[in-house]
Image (cartoon, rainbow, N blue to C red; front, side, top):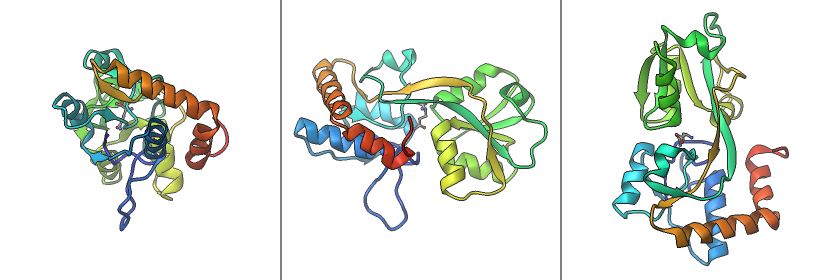
Length: 220
Ligand code: GLN
């Protein structure tokens, strides 16, 4: 399984800890267990994940990856397993940027190869800086290299609340609604149906809800 381990609370690694952790990590291990497989996770940069699967270095991707038509040309997706969307983070004292429309004429950081990168380019008139990880984007914001970061809502919220980060805030407005899916090779319909079956079982037997509650609290 390939994953870009830079996306807390879905996939991340605490300093000094060998194990990758997060919602996706727990979910894919539970799916593997259900299918009778041991899961081996490889850390691959987000924009390298689909190429790595096409080169057959990995069989599966779980990486907070949004299901969209462009990717469906190259991979198969499982049923959706998480509802997400894009929001933005600005400095706490920011006055000029209150909504996505205000981004015109400003510099914005996004992670390379993501739906954020695509969506911000589509807004038009925005100077887009594409960086390797969300952490790089947040650092750029704090260092005044950009005026906003657009990224997935749960990751923005986790960054601000869980890391005790100060000097920045997340805005409520959502640019898009997106569903995450697990990806596999375009011709691997057998794996797709097995993963969907396992996912369904975990939703029925309460295991999915347990993993959800562990990372996001009670409500969905
Ligand atoms: N959900 C976004 C996408 O699919 C970002 C995923 C990520 O950075 N791990 O493009």
